Image 1 (cartoon, helix red, strand yellow):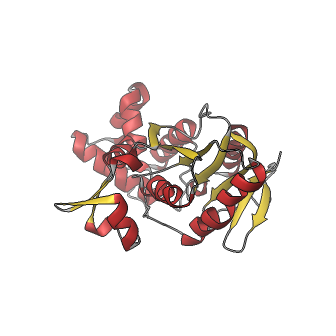
Image 2 (cartoon, helix red, strand yellow):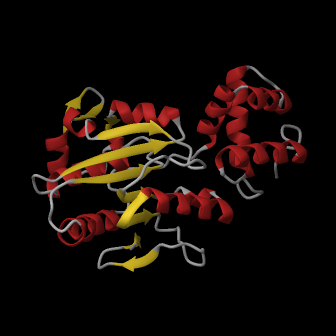
Length: 273
């Protein structure tokens, strides 16, 4: 049961309405405890003892609001998370783009890692592209997140021993430098990725993307917000491009132009036109 003395039902409704309006993230009775625990944490940091006082602050202070949205987002990730997706990426998607869609004419493949958290996903993509992309093909990756704290970690590219689990030994030796307390990604891999703040509620301004990864993000949105995000992905993507979403997420039943695609390794979605 929620701590009524800390956050009343009326307060909860105010907070969740503001969060939804600013980020499309949905809080319900089911995940109310997550909001409350993180709100308590922020109030302790600020020395504020009233949720009402803090609500007034984030209502007028956009920077504090951005920090609060950062705090309430869930940033669970790891290198090579859901290996089946990366198998499909390596063995089907990239070869399909090169051989059949781009007609073998060397150029640059453009990739977006949306909701990149602390950077493990875009760095995984970059390492794979370095391995499989034949010259003179090139690639560029945009990686975005609503959490500035996560983006700072991603840009630094340093990961403790516990965070590098799942990276093949050959990749670890080739693309990381061992340092005290962990590993640092090589600068040449970092240079392939542009990390940027982005709220998926808004248009990214990106266009002509060949591949979009947005995994385990839209699960936190309600159906109208999910549809709006997916439609913005459609606008950002090139014809015959590919979309990866989380294994627990689906576009089934959603009015979208994407077509479901089942490969030998994993399922994903494709923009055919």
